[in-house]
Amino acid sequence: MTRLLALLTVSLGITLAAPAHATPGEDEAPADDNNGSFLSDLHTVGISFKDPGQAVAAGKSVCGMITRGVSGLQLLTDIRDNNPALTTNGAAQFATISAKAYCPGQLEESKGKGGG
Image (cartoon, rainbow, N blue to C red):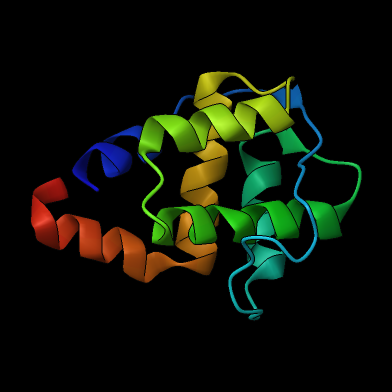
């Protein structure tokens, strides 16, 4: 998880348009009320999307992947593969914003294990 946290905390200012992608029903974290702030945070860093619902589903799927122990590198690769317009840094920003919005406990758990 230390490596995941390091990859997730990479942040550079980017401006790009990239549709978020997720398969509905797969890898989704429980629904909550963070969708508005999640979408706003994506907009703030320049990540745009055609379908807000799909962006939310993709964000929630990040938590499912983290929970299953997917490596940070694999997580970023999966995000980029499903969103070709995203750079690696853009994928890291998306993953970080997703984790902060939908599974902040995963980030705290990583820090507790020496991840920062």
